[in-house]
Image (cartoon, one colour):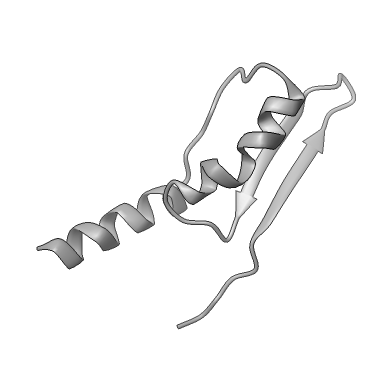
Length: 65
């Protein structure tokens, strides 16, 4: 099993817009990891879920089958 370092990347544009991206997290852990940062940064305009978010859900479904 390969482990990936868990990181949270925050990008701030010249206009002050921020982007929070989690890496190395799967499933809902992605959202849990970044929640406090997102709350501190203000109102979320959008959210894009990556394939990592769905990875854990598929693994859990496979185990329950």
